Length: 378
Image (tube, rainbow, N blue to C red; front, side, top):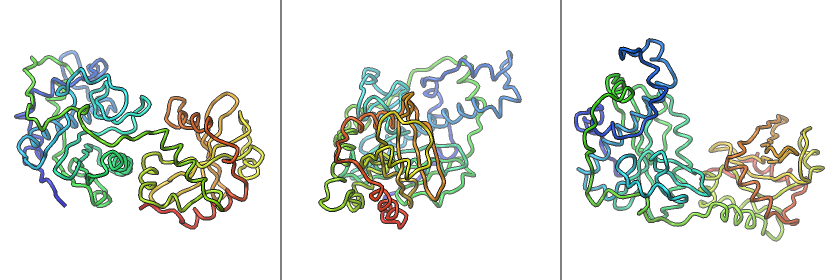
């Protein structure tokens, strides 16, 4: 596996060649300035403020991105590097779907106007695409989990490329051995440069001209070519395909292929039909009201080793609930009214047909097979 080596400049978070560019990124300084006294001294209590720590993480990301620009400029193996922040063309921020730069100047993949995934940086070699994740948090379990969705999405968008990740962390980070094999891990020194943070927050430094990167390898997200990924059309195709078997109510073998494994990582849950309220309440000790006479049924990927039947129902007040019942333990969760799951379930509700109904015996059979690890992550 090709592996890029961290430079001393990056390892030491040396700002010599990138410092001036940091002042061209957009920062919300309104509340951050309250962290300092009138004479410009950081308040003692501010050092542990979540707002201050969040800002440090934002600046750390910008520092690494600026270093990566220099790294890419001097590395012939990197063929294309996606621009963001102050380096991207401002005319390209109005695109609404696909791989783009959002209003926050971040690299995202959007569908139906919502972010599916965000990437701290993206670059290409001859046969690979690298997505970059940066974090100054010492705990890496959350970051590790997020990689699966990003990897799967990129594999769908760039099927002919090998997907790799560059993970940039600080000294003292834990859980490094748990990262997938496709990850290259860089470790920098701890980011504790209070002077640059102060200058960025108080914004009293004269801004110099942006150091630009004009080599043809530096490209706009708008110009990246990739295979079209149709979000809702894919969910509909999976629903119909999973119910097309001549003898089985749900074709579980359909979910065992590599492509469906990628879809599980992108969507988390895949829709397989519905059950009536009467049947649902025989299966699940749910006492709440339900708007329609049906509850949507999904197979949900709980983690890399566990899949379960999970239900989605809409109450008479139109609130969407996620309901799971496993090993006699009931879990009920409110879903974000503006989230993807709400949009998905509204879409699925419109395309469900009478033949998509599942019976109690179907649910019991599916649950049994899932408990027996019939489905595993590929």
